[in-house]
Length: 422
Image 1 (cartoon, one colour):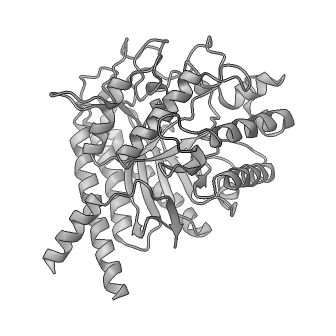
Image 2: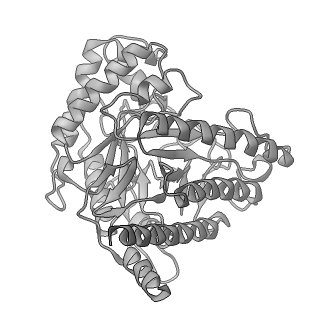
Image 3: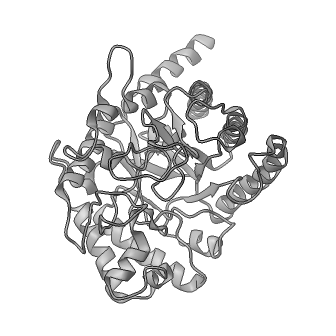
């Protein structure tokens, strides 16, 4: 019996699912015939990193004798699910924004960044990685809602107008159509046919007060994507029950799974200057995890915790500073996720930490990002070095340990599934 189980563990590790689309069955993800669970990361800057002129392909894909590339290091850690931003909107002279953008002006594209998108998807495909792609952003650091509104005569500071302006919605759908119809210049695969993409997300952290309008927008946009990419999943990308209309949004039948984010420090549950406050924070985190998992069960869908992070010890921005509290926080969340997955009946299926900074380092610890600086895990509108996980952090072996645990659990579940079939 033990020999059979060990053989299954090896087969799970070696299986090539690079050409399989992730599907939803019985409130779980499946890749081919196997249940698909994952510990992933946010690698939001990957599209820009892959650009041949403005990016840094070597950092992302070129391993040397003493150092793994970022994608190879992630793969060695067992991290095979990456949440990446689909470029962003210009103009490229704005501060605290991703530049160069994929769309510097309305429906005028930067081919260098599109080539970065092609390159990233192709390199992920070679490594059997899966991508979750937010197509838009409520926040200003990639242009997002506010930029669409400004381009069509509204106020950049009023991102909620995004939902109500017909010209904005037509523009957004045209961008989606152009993206899904793009053919990868490296491998010849149309984006809408590429199994490297697990899911398209309508936005990163969309917010609204009008729940009826929200549901209508979600349904219309999701159907638009599914008509053009029927083999891909679609999710919302929202923060969960801490925001308005979370339940109404996730009840939309067309969505394939629910998402939530967990920000203990941002939401005032944890003060990095008082390390012992992490204990109270973990109580609040546990409550929040439970509530959002229960929401997924209520709507009958898989659940992914796709953003969580916390500062280095005492809020330091120095890449050489300790991460003991962060490692406790990560371990707590990974334990929660894996324990639920072990229960078989749970519908939580994955977790993506925020965020992988890899080989990048801030030009100024705690400073603001400027064009030409390394991309790291912290977007341009946030202090650089806040939540980044670097390639030499103690968090790296911790993550590897938990992906190994998850692989073991996944093999056990697959074995039990085979026994039931027999």
